[in-house]
Length: 322
Length: 275
Ligand SMILES: Nc1ncnc2c1ncn2[C@@H]1O[C@H](COP(=O)(O)OP(=O)(O)OP(=O)(O)O)[C@@H](O)[C@H]1O
Ligand SMILES: [Mg+2]
Image 1 (cartoon, rainbow over the protein chains, first blue to last red):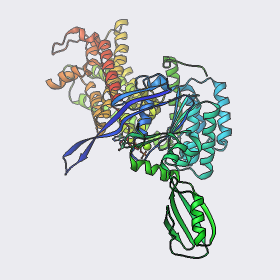
Image 2: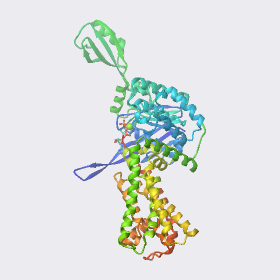
Image 3: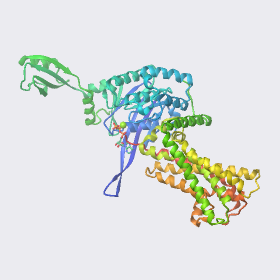
Image 4: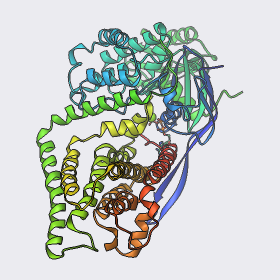
């Protein structure tokens, strides 16, 4: 049995749309539309999809905040909505867009409040906090009221708050939003460690796909409330990223090259980009063909960007449902 | 890690509440000018209530047969109940704000009941001004009413303050729950509870028939009017049964059960916000 199990989960929202001055039209938005998946203990899963795909709604059902309209959700063997407070002991949640800390309190006091709510023994709390303070470098702002913290500092505080009670599952909804490059890589490193060393199961949503590439062994893509891909990042690239790009620098500006099996997608002075299908030709064949007619100064091969690959999945709908 | 099952005990909840309140008071103290201003204004507003009653009695000796001391007993007990509910439970009203903003989410992510978290977090010490004022009025009234105090009567006064507190508290929660269905309905809570508080200041006889019947159902009549009749040795001129004076605890229990059911049903209806 998986740690997190969803079976045919749906969630509708009734929304009222104004038509004319006072009349309202009742619409039903299906935010999550038949999602089923299982996450095993210890996994680190990236849950991605375009805006409005249903990611946050799914996370909220996994925490018990929202009741599913249909289907069943089980987390750690519990029904999240019915056993919400019991489940709360075992999960940690970070909503990057929301504040969960006490606005007017310093982080230290927030953490102390949480310690009482989760009934963490004082010495264990002190040990964990010391560790997080070191790993996330919280020391310099532990006594500053949360409202005075920068976004990155606040996020580090939120992540700490979500982990201090030692949960076995961590949900992160856009945890790296608004972080600079250094903070981001630091947060990633930390999360990877939490997963690896503490064995915490992580479900992560993000719009920064490099988060997923760096962190997650498994990737789920959701679009219009449905899971359209579930597998590894590499598999996704292999299946949907058949196109690569050969970038050649010629001796000077030239007409777009004409080569079998590839097409020029961009020209910039002496530099040209040729897109080719991996199965139809190889880079070596292409280079040989070009070099036989034109002098090439330099060349590189670009792997498909994960962004492009996933954009292909969204547009293509559900390609792998067998 | 130690596995812990089930929710926190009552004692643990009390600790959590106290910590939340302590944190809140410390935070509020950062804005102390507004804190002090509000406290003073609450105090003054409370005394204006009393001035209104005194002015009323400078024109008439009795109000529907009630002397000023008797009305003061009614006012003191009911207002104390209300003031206590205002200090400890009226924070439920902030549910509307958090539901609207989607920040109610965070109350659902803790291993503690959301109502406890809400009431602790939104606690405002400044509301305590009214408690002080009600206690003063009650103290004066207790010495002025023509009652031979004995244990049952004293117990009745204590019970009716407690019952009134629970009934008002239930009404706060009940009316605040409406926000789970209709986000715009914040004012409803205020009008029921504050309006209800006003009604309980006066002998019910002075109100028209429909209002009297309404507050018997709603159940503000049980807050202090019925028990006060009994303490003063009066009969209800409208002939409600004598056992009404003792029905308070049961009515309070029923109010709490209804409020609890509606609150939890509201939480099931909570839909958060899109972003
Ligand atoms: N509380 C709500 N009331 C009404 N509609 C909602 C609510 N929450 C979400 N929705 C709708 O459900 C759909 C899915 O929203 P959700 O927030 O789950 O998307 P998401 O994948 O998290 O998007 P994003 O990447 O923009 O955060 C959207 O169409 C949204 O408008
Ligand atoms: Mg979202």
